[in-house]
Image (cartoon, chains in turn orange, red):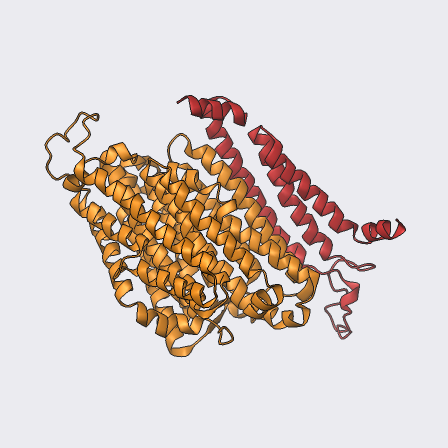
Length: 496
Length: 132
């Protein structure tokens, strides 16, 4: 049974998406339990896989029994062994909390919504689990296309913002495909491990250089790395909060995972950091990304858009950490994939709860929320502390590794950018807290909020949120174990 | 000069796909009409499909179906040089499907935008958004 975990991860959400869309015709109430059951199986399999990897080492799962390089293989090592549970558990927790939002905002579209949700998770899990470069492209497009559908179910401006995302996302995926094409020309293989075996003799080839550059640009477009970030803030802001709390935490992080996979497994660190010698320039780009993300967030008077720009800045953290080219930086970047996924999930779920109750996310709508929604606000404080980087929340530890990596690489600009961004985050969040805590209720809605009493979001939304907040602190406390037992083995020995 | 021409002619498939790709990219950046942008995006995708198809080609080779592959006299050597490489073509079947799906989603979004703003010209839409 547990030999089939890698297949379960992709097949169960995929088939259940089909079942949900059929069941939706019969009885809309059945969609939600089916979706929860499917994602529970996926979460269970991913955790099981992580333990199997820790016991047995790298797992190669041959789909349909065809062995690589001819067949498609799923390849699970410590790196994606760690990312898989993050993706599946975050998707599951978020699914449980958004049921009420779906019921409130588009009850008649519940079936299609859950179908798209499951397909999106299928795509994301598939990207992370696959060991085949072309298969990755297909799953990338599955995740992207369903993502467009989910994001467009929002406010009036959502369709235009999503269409812009679609242009950029398609260019990004096409660039990745083109890069894979060049790799195929020179190696004749699509299996990642097989390509890595054939590449070292070709490191001086211009085609390999082109393949690497084109793939990187494509992946950067998809993860909204600073100069290529233009699609992200609007697409995430105007989407409905049920979709944005799935997509904002996971999509950019999964794309950072793809970048790390490209660097560590396909092209190897020797080619990327020694033969190419462009890492310094990329880290400077990341510095600009972090600073610009922070500054643009500062200019917003709107909670959701502010958080979207923080996502842009966080992408800079991870790209910079990877391209520092040393062990601490890479550890920080991988740890930050986990941490940033959890803390972005936390703050976007908070936005979901606020929108459910207040019907708005501009700063004026947030007045007096600490008294009205104490639990939600408690979770916001925890998430904010983590994004700022206050111990014992997990954000502190990944930032610590990134800063240590920056110092040992001698890249003080990156260190300064990290500290600057932390300080800006302090300003950003305490400005929000001030509005929520000190300013009295806004009266312009004119109904049932004069009482001044508690008016918290439903229990089914608050409990998952509090679980995420507790996970934030638990991951922080157990950071040492995560690094020592998992991430240490995810990074090749050759990296000093 | 003859060098330049011979390099262009020898690798003409790459030149064609790059030209097509740039036409698509230009349309996506410069055009004001949303449907024209979507058409540009489709040209962009098709260019990459063309690139993949062209790399499977070999001179003097035929379609990759083995002649006399079955029956009692099936024992014979297969020369890979005699058959074009089918793998890139198979990959492109998937890419075509992806391209069609993307086109469909993009056009559906364009319809929604048209219903909201009664226009598909981007500058007019932006003007309406700013007015609100």
